[in-house]
Length: 119
Image 1 (tube, helix red, strand yellow):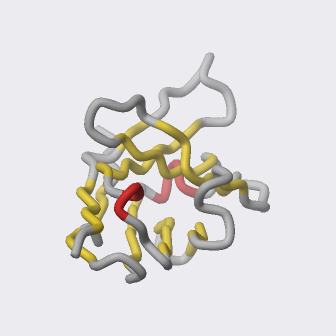
Image 2: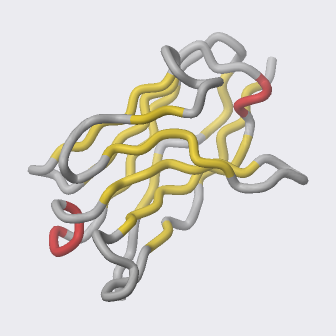
């Protein structure tokens, strides 16, 4: 059973920062694209940031220049460092591991971690 273990959510004031972590099994981490999604109440889950196995990063426009995604191969961990947080960033954040080819391997989701931005 492949598990993605997330941590780092919590309550933060507007303008504050948080860093989320997601640890994956070594067997998939180096080969899979890693992504962070979020889902606010009553909203669809949306892709926030991604970091492909081959390098590079991509961000949803509203978080560009505020969020940074990175991966530590030695720790099999992907991070989402969030700065200048705003109330609209409040959501459950999910880590996602996307395989090279969905025809041959499954994708995996973390359990989700709540981020609440409020004064």
